[in-house]
Image 1 (cartoon, one colour):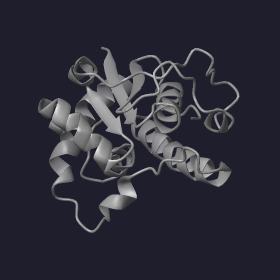
Image 2 (spheres, rainbow, N blue to C red):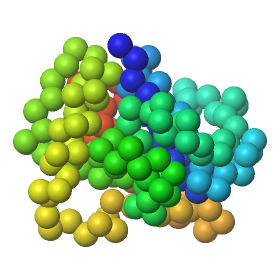
Image 3 (cartoon, rainbow, N blue to C red):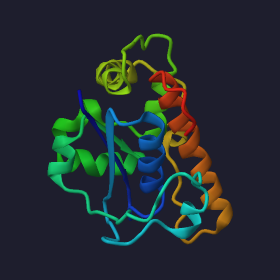
Image 4 (cartoon, rainbow, N blue to C red):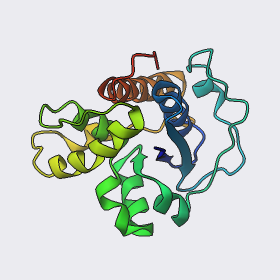
Amino acid sequence: MSFQVLVLCTGNICRSPAGELLLQHGLGDSVTVRSAGTHALVGNPIEPQMAALLPADIDTDGFAARQLGVRMLRDADLILPMTRSHREVALQEYPAALKRAFTFVEFARLLRLPELTATAASPAEFLAEAVPMAAALRAGVRGTDPRADDVSDPYRRGDEAFRTAYADIHRATRAIADAAGVSRPA
C-alpha cells in the first residue's frame, strides 16, 4: 500500500521542506511525503538556517521548492499545512480535501487522543486508518487555542525563529511517527 502526504507552507523553503524531510525520514518508505508552497519560491533550495537544523543523515541537496497545485491536493491522502491559513488556501483550491487536511501540529495532537484507535502493520496503513478517525474527532475536541496548531514562519526572522519553528515541526513529526509505531529517530 502506498500513502501520500503533502506538507504545505508559504514559500516551500523553510517549514514545509523540514516537515517533508523529517516525516519521510521518520515514517520510512511505505509513505511518500512531498511539500509545496501556496506562494512558492519555485526552484529555490531549503533555507540554509533550516537545513542546518536537520539531522546530518537527511540530505537536502535535491530539494527544490514547488508551487501548490490542485492535482497535488487531489492526489494526497493526507494534507498537512503549517498553519490554518494554508489549510484555508488548500480548501479553497480543492474543497474535497476537507476531511484529510489538518495543520501539521493539529494532526499530531489528534493522534495522541485515546479515542483514536488506529492500529496497522505499516505507517501507510496506520495513516490510512487514522485520517478519517482524526477528521471525525476534530469537531469534538474543545479547549485548544487554534493558534497553537500553527507553526510560525521563521523566514527572515533570525536563528531563534528558525529554532522555534523547527522544534514545533520536530515535535509533531515525532508524535506522528510514534503513533504510527515507528521507532526510528526523526
